Amino acid sequence: MSVFLTKLTLLGKLSTLSNTNNIASGKSFKLLCQSFLTISTQSDINYHQFKTFSTINYETKNRLAYITLNKPEVLNAIDGLMPKELSECVAKANDDPSVHVIVLAGAGKAFCSGYDLKYYAQNKNENAVQEMPWDSMKDYTSMKKNTEYFMSLFHSSKPTLCKIHGDALAGGSDIALCCDIILMANDARIGYMPARVWGCPTTAMWIYRLGIEKAKRMLLTGDKINGIEAEKLGLVLKSVPQEQLNDEVERLAQRMATVPINQLVMQKLVINQTLESMGLRTSQMFATLFDGIARHSPEGLVFKRRSETAGWKIAVKERDHGTYDWTADMPIEMEKKT
Image (spheres, rainbow, N blue to C red):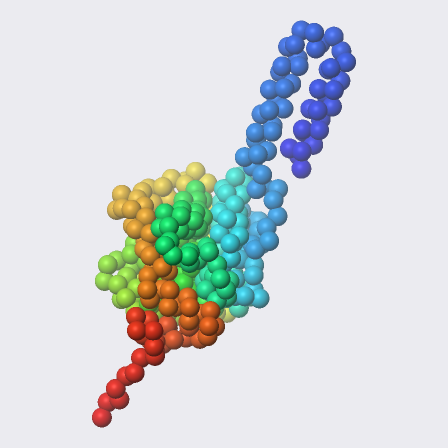
């Protein structure tokens, strides 16, 4: 609002100057125009400071910025708008000199259930699956944007803490794992089930958090694990009973918030550059490409068709339980042990 009012003031002065002798010299007029352009440019850069969000709730208090995924009616499922708004909220917190630490959470019963499969899988959607022959670079360009939006949490100058309750599944786990530190409820669940069919985690953060063998254990099964096992594997910092989660997050966030911002930024830069040196960007390039391939592979197209005909809930159940052969396009017949 202050930027807007400043523009109005400058416009008023320009109008006044046009009726005075000052305009003859051109000096005052030129200086005022330069000031107006500076303010206009600044307002364009910081437009998110005055923006409201439809999928996310943003608030600040006691040196903390609280970013809350806010679509509880669908377990905060990811739509076409949420990733961009998430990135804009992170930018807003980084531009606010009163904020030292960012806390990410989800409203309602879950952190984030992943991409909205009713929208992307059950319904016809060119953003998820193109008509054949498909353009892999078109898909990569689209998905790369979401990867970068999620990674705004990782690249944020200020520390990002993630609070997981309920589910952090599929694309929801992508978001969570981009944060610097994760705290999780014991009975919450995290996993990337699309690794079984129709997906690849585009941020590739499973590898960098777990190491090779444990990442394979998770991505070669697509299993979901609870907070206790996630802590044991080293995927999250700590798992606590649900009723203690809020207090646990607040204690850590407030402790970090007493550190000067420049100190927080320096420590985070030093640590993050090690992952960059280990090839994080290259891993994400391949993962994002493979995610597109997985959705357009023969098996991926069968999953999409199954979601459209039987409904996404049935397709997901068959995927997660391992009861459907996506290559043969038929239920799996398992011989009973005698």
